[in-house]
Length: 187
Image (tube, rainbow, N blue to C red; front, side):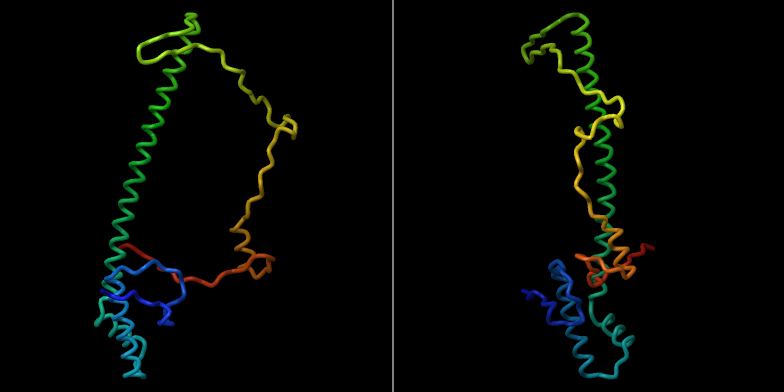
């Protein structure tokens, strides 16, 4: 069994909270790190490009990462398909809800006009009742302040970030350390 890889032992890896490495990537990463250390120790004058080419050719790390990225693309395709399906299902749900509401209003209207107060069936009973009056807003601007709820303030993170990036000091906030990221272009 492969021991769990210790990121702290390799200072070249930034201290970023990462998920546990899958076994194939952990093994390739370990082999890559070991080979890098050996090459740097045995060939101290080795230039960066030759080192990178040698590591790529002698380890499976780039292939393992490429396979992981291809798997990610498959996940993104599934996500897009599921979002479309969910959207279709939400639309269908709304149609059923609208249809059920129209039927309820139709029964209410007909029972009211026909002065039928109760219908008793083996599987349900429906009774016509007068509901309490609903609030109708005629002009919001004329409604007194006593009937408005104050909303708690919400932090504008974008404006705060812009101010900090522009070099302005903001008490209670600072810019964190940059984190590595990747850019993926699909051919």
